[in-house]
Amino acid sequence: MSTPSSSVSSVAKSNTIVIDDGKDESTQICKVAPARKLRSIVWEEFDKKKDEKGVDKAICIHCKENFDGKSTNGTSHLRSHLKRCSRRVKPGSG
Ligand SMILES: [Zn+2]
Image (cartoon, rainbow, N blue to C red; front, side, top):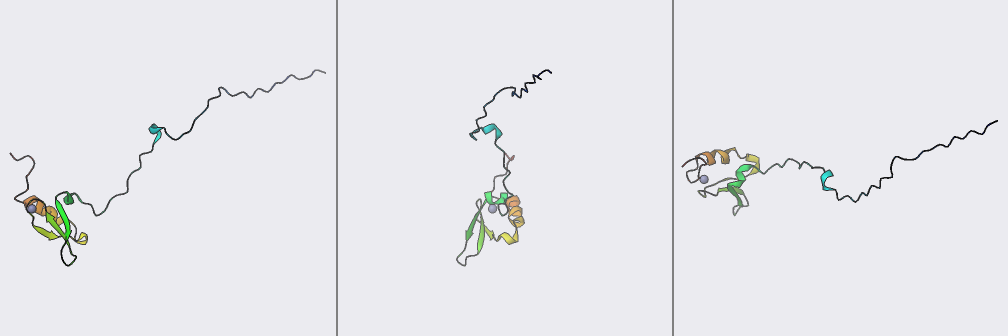
């Protein structure tokens, strides 16, 4: 009769203390912002205003010409104006 000397050693490799204070910036997840509708690049060059009737107007910041600014109409007409706007300084021309 021999007493089994089995000492089960379930010792962890190392006692690492993890401090989770949530301040680790390296683990921050870059959240992708939801796609913004309604904000087209043309609005960089148009002022959006309402006229006296409350109708949305888009005013070219270069020549002050005003256009229909309703978002339902899209911005293609504004875009095409920017292409032919005489007051607009075209990049690369000089
Ligand atoms: Zn213009």
